[in-house]
Amino acid sequence: MILLAAGQAKRFGGGKLLAEFQGQPLWERAAETAKAIDFCKRVVVVGPDSPIESRLGWIRVENQFAENGMGTSITVGVRALTDCDRVIIMLADMPLVSRTHLERLIAAQGVAFTRYPDGSAGCPAILPRSAFRQLEGLTGEQGARSLEFGEAELVAPLDWRELADVDTVRDLEKLTSEPYKKAHGPTLVG
Image: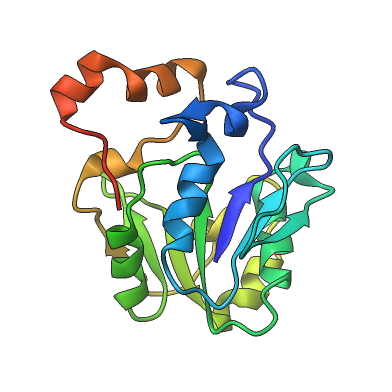
């Protein structure tokens, strides 16, 4: 599994992944969800000079070209998975993705992406080893969905709130606000 944590967080004003969310750094919430599943390896891809430190059960890999886009981070992460049959790619700024959703992706055969409300495909996604060479060729802002895999399964989360992506300070404030909690119910766990 690869947790992408190398973005520059320009829209957030920097330091996004260390911003507090439910009493812990934002990235650690996603890492905890991933740690609950028995993956062959867990890789966190960070940018140069990242304050995110390695933690037990994770391999910290630095992407020297992180400013060039997410594709370079996927490439670096996949290269660290030398003996895995499949890879889940997950974003560190999506703190509400549940273990249940990851398990549903794992149950899919072949390539599977998360289905978004508008029908588009995105992260988290799972891909077999046969896709690793293509993933290693990604550059710039290209993500895995930009590649041709033929038929890919789309797996919708049980709750669309799991797909909340923190890009700005306002996004984070919204997730932790009382009006959001009242309108959308308790924050998802597991």
